[in-house]
Length: 282
Image (cartoon, rainbow, N blue to C red; front, side, top):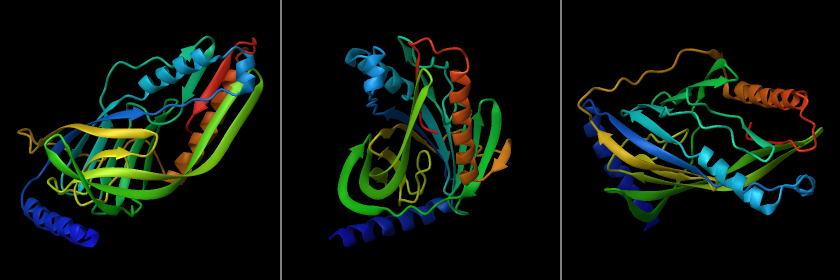
């Protein structure tokens, strides 16, 4: 039954995709993100006065920091994913504790070309622009028979299991600890064959229909609005500015920059017995 359902979905996707390819098909999807935060303070942090109430407050502040809105503009083979511009939120901090988040910025532009199996990601780290260009990795999805509606669109469930590396660093006065561990996580996506493009938010793609929701166990990305074939033609442009690097090289740069930030904060005369820094990501 599962294989039969999969065959029907793929067949419908092929038919509709062939129809849409004969037309100038475009769309704009709006996504909202939400991050599940469960920041733990070890015994050393507790000795510095970080109690349960403060820990809960910081988790709440961090969660708001990761509530963002993005727009995905797409056609049958290309897409651009970009955060909506808004007033920058202040860095989360409470009672002498400051959180540094390494990663994407509001200026980041992610271009994906599923026909050529490649992407270009314009990023900025500490004022320096990079252009990450590499191949799109094939994503092996398991198509499930479970369905649900997201807005007016009937969506089908798909899952894939991956191994991810989690890095968490913390600095209390002059003492720094960094924990790196690998975790196996299941990614759950919901896609709709009613919009037969193999695009999706962030780096997600490869399903027989637009991905409207993704959950990786920590972050949830949900589509809140879709406009198909808008009156004004959409320009899907690949970013070109920035120092060109591969994905592996960019990740190496991220690690080095985050280490430099930690060193700089420690060298700013903040060892007053109350200052605590926590880095997430990178």
